[in-house]
Image (tube, rainbow, N blue to C red; front, side):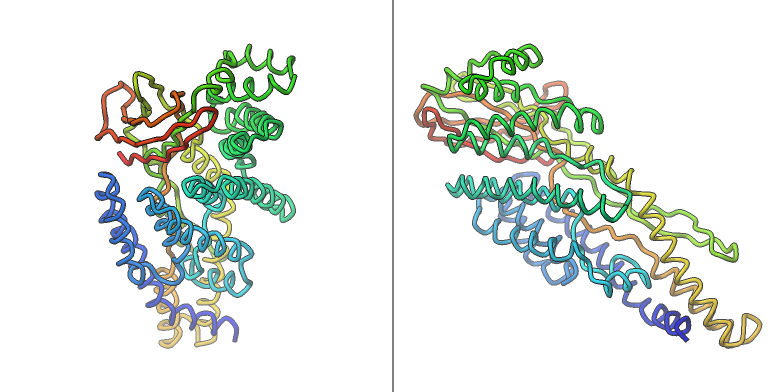
Length: 448
């Protein structure tokens, strides 16, 4: 009787699942409708467009995706308080959904993952704290920014313990070097050189090992100067000499900060990888071959290769600090076999339920059995869909640019360039009051 019940649930739920498939298409369409506004930097218009879509095509099960996107858009609209309000909701929901209920898992096994509330990908659960930290800096709350950045590192460690404990396929996303550097920067902004040095060193090691090995990205050059600047006053002469030799850092920033301030630009570049449906064949217990759907990440390569930060004759190009696309694609490659295994198990449950119900109804040779089998097969095909939801407004990478300027008001210009140096899109200007010995952090975005 359980098999009959499952087959009936499957057939009855097919219209709902078809509706959800249409909703997914609607989410993609909505994103591309507001994309032109984001590309031209009109973040307020993008926020208004997204707000109109809150109930349709976004639904209750998509609330995490909505909050992540709205929080990001409002961040770049310079509305830090409103941005945090959305991102905090997303973070809380992701934490809650991380321990998915048994009933939710059962629902997805009978149909597909689109029936379950979207709880965010691993990298989304971590990178949300980058934006809450930057928002708090914008609001003049560096201590709160530090708390948020540290929460990202703590959650990443917690997630790694979970993978090891549960014996799942695991993750290559074991350290976030960019977030470790960000924590170090925030410690240094608080005047805590010792902890800043420890975090800069941890970031440097993570870049050298995890990032270089898994994502093909060496440490950015600026981190060498951070290590020398914070390590020298602490008396770490041997380490300082090592870092100078390895990175070419001179320690000149220690002197520069005495009469100058530093402007640090964190550039969100491009668009994060998007999801598409990957179809493959799965063989059922009796040899029947069924088409099975899983999500697949696809890179969106930015046209912008770097940004130039300049003011009063001083300029510097940004360096890659967080290769989000590489992290996403490499991690997905590792987890794909497990995703396929779950999708096959789901297909087997649906297929076996249909065959069992058909047998109870008199077998494939009877009229009723044929109808039950046909209805079950149609429902199984209709409910086989990949979950394509994601944090679509997240950038493809974070880049960092830094310049030292004398104390006082300055106009800082940020221009974007392709790999050949040609300008891409309009440049942006920001008014910054530079304070000697202090840092000003700007968060900018390009979507070309």
